[in-house]
Image (cartoon, rainbow, N blue to C red; front, side):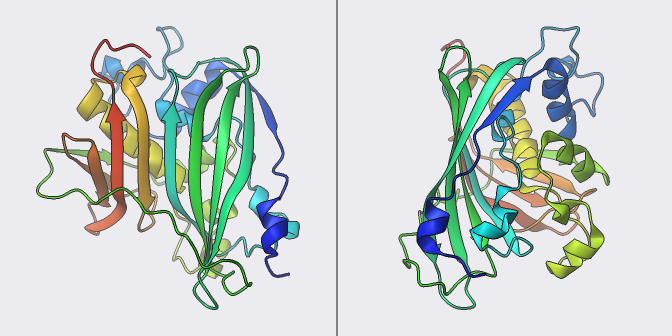
Length: 289
């Protein structure tokens, strides 16, 4: 079944109502590697529910997550061959550690790059407080549909990424991933078998399961929060990046950071860039929300 432009643009991604618990908030932080240093009390603030628990800003990507909806045969998408292209978050205020959350996801754009060249799908999700109706955060993403170009859709416009940082980075932070980290991260609701099943990974052209792009996103967010905000999640306003290559669980992610908020990341073991065109915006200390 080929992609139908109008049908996919208007695909009814189910609204998700989620009861967020402190356990969910802790699980998310652990799944992106927080508290690997158990002596760092700033990290413990995100994983120890006996403290004044805080939510990682990047948790916005899993709140109200609609699951692997694009694998529904009605989308016409080759779900085995797709990869996450870009991800961004915009935060209105610090995320809650518990409460009732609504996630509303929609397709916002579709670009046909041509036969054999794939397609780009753009989507957006609003994270809403179910009690007040307040929008807490907006997330946006692009997905590269490697097996779906040539369906007759518009050839553009593709949305430009943030400019690449220039010069040498001001700060460098290395964070290790664990061999089983993708299996932990799946518990946040991202069930794509590409991250767990070696046979599916092989069909997709990878030697073994890869780490979720959104897990890499969370790890890089951790580095930025450490380097530029002293672990204060209230200061992060916006974060965007482009995924340039997959990470394999067990590799070390080195985030290279510029004082103006630009960043990129590479895996140390292969010296391979995995994140490019990164840009984050932080409020000044004490600026509030």
